[in-house]
Length: 388
Image (cartoon, rainbow, N blue to C red; front, side, top):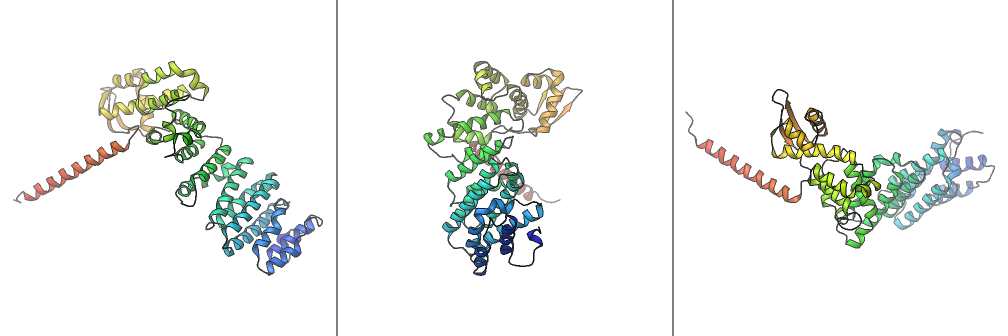
């Protein structure tokens, strides 16, 4: 049987309808309905004709036909979106598309094309808030259900802009983040957990309690992951502050160690709460390694030069291992430092703070203003010096 992409030139939607009729032995009989709708340029009716048969439409024997079918559906949807002034009607149509794809596009090839169809339909509905959110939520849920969410990771940064839109509620955003988390299985969860936590800023204690499960996972990851070396965001998150008391108070204590304390404080937390924290996912070996780098950075922030012995003491390592840890700290970007093998000393030109809170930004601003004033005074004084 000929592929529909090879058939004689007609309106593409009508060609597809005829192909579906022939390839299913007449089980899909929408040729007349589609042709009349195309002639009348009623693109919503065209979509309504195809939607119950999306599974059959996308489940083609070769990729060229399947992608061609998807392209025709997207084209019809775009025309419907462009002509529609009723966001509610378009939103309702979007819900039907999501439902149809979710229920009938589970086979490997069909599921991939089903995800593409939902994503493209979402992009087309850019100026229709309800339809766009319905399709975005449906795209996320379908990707999570069919284990394809990694294909959507490139879209994730756009969620930050979406959070700022006035026509999108925080409740809707939280729903998206939770769906995404059901589909993300690797370290990419950290960024999504952080977005979810940020969506709870300013909420009361009762609402913050809803986020406890996600907050504990976020804090565990922040403590475990070697790449997390600044904690401003966690210090300011209301969800993190909400676990300072109660069942997960020891986890918050561990977070405070990472933010402000040293390895001795870490040892104390491990001794008192180690079993509980390990049971919820804390890897103390990873935390200890990170704390060595953070402790070196803290030492470097108050001393521009120090000995190998001082570095070994603050990191609780042998003096012979200091070079290795300095190299790790430089590679992590927390310090810029040079080592002198002869004097067995370390000279630091920059050290990164673990936490830089609003009050510290204000102090920095004041210091910069003082520096600017002193520079201006110096320039004025130089201008008064007579030229020989």
